[in-house]
Amino acid sequence: MTAPLRKTRVAILISGRGSNMISLIEAAKAPDYPAEIVLVLSNRPEAAGLAHAASEGIPARAIDHRDFPDRARFDAALQAELEAARVELVCLAGFMRIFTPGFVEGWAGRMLNIHPSLLPLFRGTHTHRQALDAGVRLHGCTVHYVVPELDAGPIVAQAAVPVRPGDDADGLADRVIVQERRLYPAALALVAGGSARLEDGRVAFDGDVARADGALLSLAV
Ligand code: GAR
Image (cartoon, rainbow, N blue to C red; front, side, top):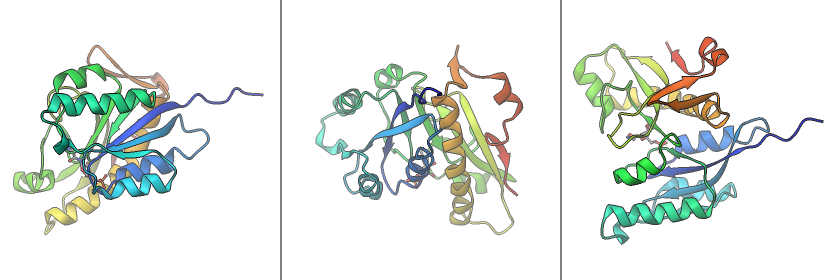
């Protein structure tokens, strides 16, 4: 008899719709998926994703940043929730709030984010508009480790989509989010399972992953 898989305890942080969160929750239902989603937190009580997580039986709580006088005290409240749930890895999924450097450093190598561009291009917001304005022919999304500098951490996985003549920002967003929902579960599986990790500020992959990385590097045409 094989020993049961030890699953990494993951919290997902959201601010809105939570469609990436849903894709992670769905992936984690597979018995051989190396992560379990044990907590969902939002800085916005009205985030639609909270109700969905609760309907899945996952503890889901709002910690409204407007209730705190500064970032440090908001981050401390987040930290307390994460510790109480014995969270080992944090996934940001549309979490639109900047952390204090101390909070990020405390989760170094244990916090992932998905960003809707091919980093290091187009950090920040309105990434699809930025891509159209720059005239790039390829756009996409990136899963990366979180570092104190915004949208700048070591890259785990990327998926590209073509920019088509006549695209507007909404159309491009629709094409990118499809890839986000596929990419994030694949990247989390690698990190939670220990096949990808942060070493000396770079992402180290197991050899077999580096050879068969179709799920982590792709062009959807
Ligand atoms: C996603 O496109 C995600 O990449 C983006 O917010 C959206 C959330 O959608 N995140 C950022 O821009 C973070 N800088 P979702 O709530 O449906 O997952």
